[in-house]
Image 1: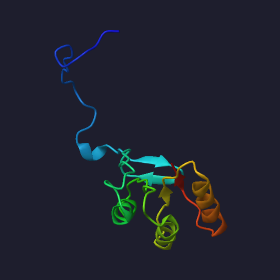
Image 2 (image 1 turned 90 degrees about the vertical axis):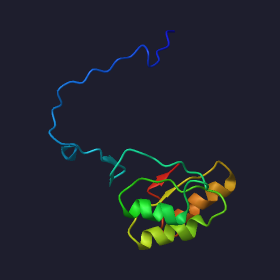
Image 3 (image 1 turned 180 degrees about the vertical axis):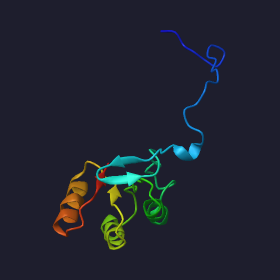
Length: 114
């Protein structure tokens, strides 16, 4: 397999079909929700927390809340109360399965599970 690096690739400018970047729409629709960018912040507790996830969702960005040392039920309830999508990270243990069942039983659900 041949490997390319910056010495092997040359990008030549060409005419662009748009007059301004404002004409471009990088938004994406996923699961019935429209998000401003097709970018996902890492679902790590060192990257996102409740406050950051609420801000992202409130401003039209996709997020996945991490699953460590938090209360996902309280978070989901708060997001639903604000009319924001619920996006949670879950594991494969029985406790994670129980969380999904509880979200459904309490009518909270989740828009996205990762």
